[in-house]
Image 1 (cartoon, rainbow, N blue to C red):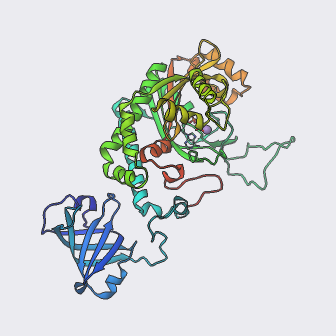
Image 2: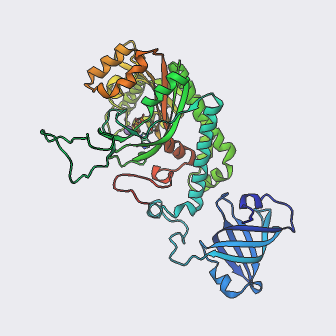
Image 3: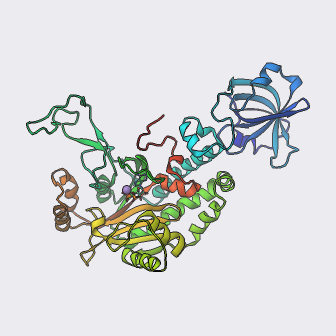
Amino acid sequence: MKRTKVIDALKRTDFGSEITVMGWVRSKRGSKGIFFIALNDGSTIKNVQIVGEDQHFDEETVKLITTGACLKVVGTLVESPASGQASEIQAKEIEVLGECDNTYPLQKKGASWEYLRTVAHMRPRTNTFGAILRIRHNMAMAIHTYFHEHGFYYFHTPLITASDCEGAGNMFQVTTKNLYDLKKDDEGKIDYSDDFFGEQVALTVSGQLEGELGATALGQIYTFGPTFRAENSNTPRHLAEFWMIEPEMAFYDKQDLMDLEEDFIKYCVRWALDNCRDDLEFLNKMVDKTLIERLEGVLKEDFVRLPYTEGIEILQEAIKNGKKFEFPCQWGDDLASEHERYLVEEHFKKPVIMTDYPKEIKAFYMKLNEDGKTMQGTDVLFPQIGEIIGGSVREESYDKLMAEIDRRGMETEKLQWYLDTRRWGSCPHAGFGLGFERLILFVTGMQNIRDVIPFPRTPKNCMF
Ligand code: ATP
Ligand code: MN
């Protein structure tokens, strides 16, 4: 089917030429025997205006041009007398490819986010979700381009795994067994020997452990794939299925790591400003009036680099001065998102890379500092979002890593392959995990993570 995409039609200036466009009716209005259709085909946030005279079309066809209907329009490209658009199309033929009656769930403008989640299969056709999804695509391209240009290899880590990276136990099990009739041993424990993999396996919560195998062979790698966490946290920043980007680099120390985190995020934000202008301007107008300003702000600022211990001091000082938090924040506590946001939005008013966390609140693989109490974590905290990146230098000493694993009472049996990186040719290395949807939240100004992925998976919801 020969057609001009709307994004290209709007750039054309060969007025008088014939043009064919196809798309969905956003709106139709008419007066004095003339009708105007705003047609959108998803190639851009902008619509192309179709102008037709009632007398040239049969009444039945004109009646079928309703909001949501899909049309093929053949017409003449003309200079537009209307302001805000250079060209429009004078329709000669209109074919209704797909009719759309008044049960269409996106008839009315201004539907709530909650309502749109119940029709997530249709919401990509709205202006806002079109903008978000185009930006999402662009961010994926930015990420691949950044790493490719910086000599990182795209490394594919498995989604089904027998190891629990974060040791948090919030994994989705994978089995082909009949759950109503499980084989059990004498002690009543499930016998996995006749299950598909012959052992208990689950969907991965992170590709990091395998990513480290890649980095200690290829030098620097990144993963970019779905991860799964059965955490029953109904927050606007957690999904049960989300996409994570995990670069892992040999011969990186904490300084190198923080520099990469900052440079990488800025690159992605700059990419959005350079390549998603129309969509950002739409979101800036409709969703968040300070969006573009905030994105540009991030590019100008040096991120604050703040040891956890100093962060706690600032929070304690704030409490002394009357600031109220819901959760405690003594030294040793994991910071809640309200604490992170206080530091970023109120105290520093710029992104913060928080470092050197107490070892008790972080994962076993992080490199221990000389003080024996803190670990070389480097999380990036962002305005509106809180934690956007979780990163760390990895413990490269076999003995220290084993000591930490023992101290935590973890099983080493299933981690042998991981420990082999430290057994043979161990090297200093570091890496981080960026939650893709958290990045999209920041770049779009949206408030809820359910609204920046096409089909969100959250507790009690696996629709579409
Ligand atoms: P949080 O404290 O916000 O739950 P985390 O400490 O569990 O985050 P990590 O295990 O360090 O996060 O994962 C790396 C990154 O993945 C986080 O910085 C965040 O951007 C993202 N992330 C983690 N959990 C989720 C989730 N359930 N949904 C979406 N993104 C997530
Ligand atoms: Mn978490």
